[in-house]
Length: 194
Ligand SMILES: [Fe+2]
Ligand SMILES: [Fe+2]
Image (cartoon, rainbow, N blue to C red; front, side):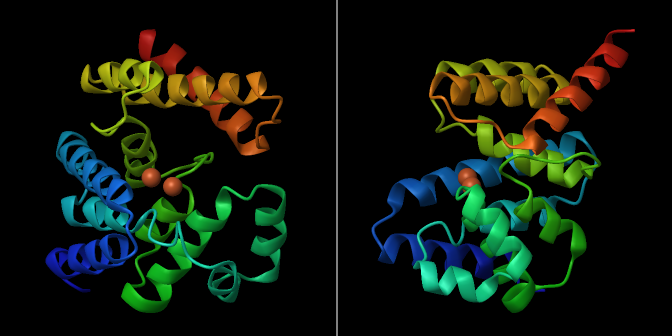
């Protein structure tokens, strides 16, 4: 596996060359949060940071480059939910060029909506994306406070709920995975309280 320093350089070069400083800053924020959470929850710091560095890697790629990375099933899915193009493509990029760790692959792939049965690493990348320090929306600050208070399940539940509410206001149907994640983490939160 490449060193974290080399991965960081690859990401930095790509975003800075293409004038996406904001995305690079966001990425550094996700890495910082993922590193902190990995320590808190006893997950490999290197794996969490690597997944965080690469989670948005293909965000601004040309459509034809993204399509080259995706299989037919994923292309169909992304056509319905275009926000998934970048997460699926970034995960495939990881597998093609960087490494073969399944957990890192899944963490990059599922960072947009999450899914049922996420590993701790997947949960960490998902919630770090929503709560990293450069996110200044009230909903993100609210979830960051919950997360830093030690409530990972609650933070995932609330971030999913707030995202679904935001979509509904814009008359956009949530992805079925978002509804599944919402229900699942609602149940986990109830167990946490008991
Ligand atoms: Fe993303
Ligand atoms: Fe992101």
